[in-house]
Amino acid sequence: MSVEIILNRESNIIMAEGHGSRWNFWNLSALGVMIGLAIFFGGLWFLLSRPIPIPADTAILAVISPKASRQILPTAFQEKIPGVCQNALASDSDWPIICGVTVSGQSFAITPRWLNNGVYASFTAGLVARSGEVAGETTPFRYTSALYWRGIAKQPGILVESSAIEKWLGLEVASTSTKILFRWNGRGFDSDLKLSPQTTPLPAGDIALALDRNAWDALPGDLFLNAVNLPDKSQWKPLPPIERYAVWLDADRSTEGRFIGFAEPLDQELAARVLGMMGVTERRALTLPDGTVSFERLLPTASTNTNLFGRRQNDIGQWVDLSSRFILVSNASSTLDQSNVAPCGASYPWLRLSKNVLNSMLGTTLPSLQAYSENNHLSICFEQ
Image 1 (cartoon, rainbow, N blue to C red):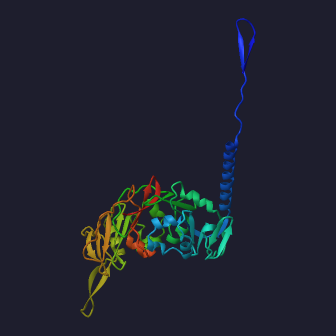
Image 2: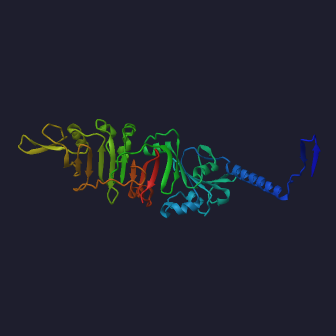
Image 3: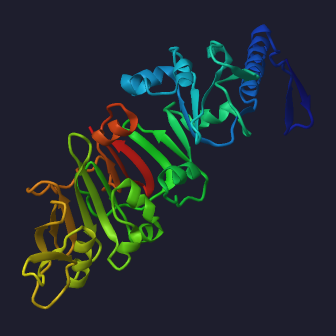
């Protein structure tokens, strides 16, 4: 409807009147459903985020769904998982399961309550249940925090305490955080720990690692002494830093040979020191007063008339090949294969562990592992 008002002969104004649509049944129903869903999911998130106590000395927290564990983890490896975690992964659900291991060896699992079958002693909070006995000092943990670790791709994740790495390996971890988060990328794990790229390849040994000057200076002597079968670091102080190190194992997983690469060339005096550390001595004949001849062992010494580089045997029958940049120690008369390992990541690896070593450590068969730098952060990949 319209009403015309004449103000004068040259101008007029037309006024209009209309009616808007009102809320109907379907509009109100949609609004009600949206409000209901918001309340439901908000309440669900609230009940899943209730704090639950876990051991204060927890070293590793791994999050993975039972369905993903069957797709990713080898059967032999699944059998090595603590029993409380195996029980939590027994379903075919896509809901995340959290498995924790402490420095002292305790294990526990955190699950939504509807996945917990009550076989193990449990502690519940909201819709979250913890299986496994937990003794000693505890700290609160929220199940929903693991959902952030998984990310949009819902891939497995592992949260590791850097203090646990330091305790287990005797190696100081250069990190601004006490926790290191690893996320599965389909072939290995990416982390938030900063690591610069390695510029030289590694020998294809069963255990191989590279050290820059800063890492060498910070490395404790007992790590080499106990883990990779090197003499105490104090004996190596006059020498150039070790740039590359590799160990080969035989069929019995005993050390068959070692490769040590130096960051700078050795001179004859340093070569003499290295040979002495590797058990190479020289025999000198001594004539006793009764006319018999005896021999004494002397450490190699540098002189203008000798060249200490080359190949010789030490006192226990090992073959020692020494050059100005590396030393190769082997139990066999033939030299070890010094070919470099092919990197499985974007850069040369800082560390390599062969499948033989992983089998010895974990008791299960896994592909060889490499640790390398991806976008200046530590990543781990498995060789195909």
